[in-house]
Length: 262
Image (cartoon, rainbow, N blue to C red; front, side, top):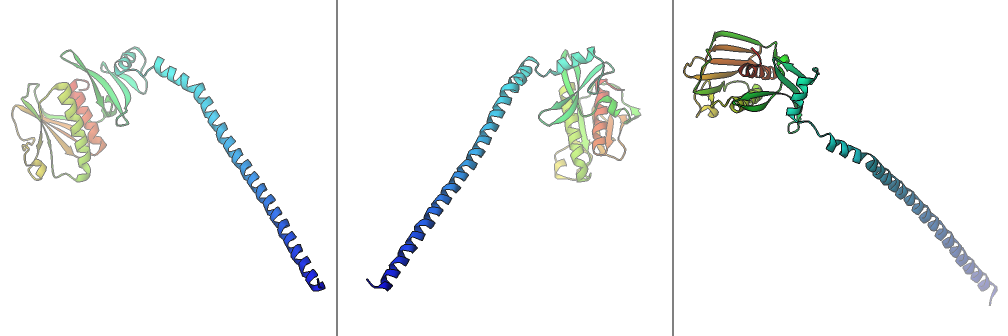
């Protein structure tokens, strides 16, 4: 073997040894990285496990008490709330007004707070909801030009002006809906929708009724107006207001019909 060949062989061997050494370092580095990764994952897994255990502990500690409170002290019914109201001093959510009990309760279906009172007709007790209490509407004006005599009417008309601005119609519709629902349920009046003029398709098949019409019927005219108020003129009662003030005037009108307010 020549001297040159021997040198070349030694260089090849040295190069192979270096590759083996580098591969060994890489394997050890990879093993270290995998170990650290596993340890990191284990720490996260342990944290999640501890969080789960804590949640279970809290549930075991408090849920039975909450469930026990719910079953041993269920929410009171309206009848029970009214009974308590007559026995206890008034609060921000309960008071007596002219002999009628009022309690504030949230409607789960609409998430709206309503003032409930009870009204009796023919031996049947009704729980009647209002958006505003009598105290909230005491400042709504009520004027009688020619007060109608109390008598039996063959029907009741709810009339509106179809030419009112669209923005105001949503409150008019809400006021009419709640007013009609209470009168139909509590007073059992036969109620019919009407218009003051025939200008829209909604009024084509409806009777045209204004406060100038007289007969054996009672008319409620819902009118958009800057000042909330109630105007009684013979057999026509005009309920006016803007947005929420119209709802207040509506509630006061109903209070008058139920004998809760003058």
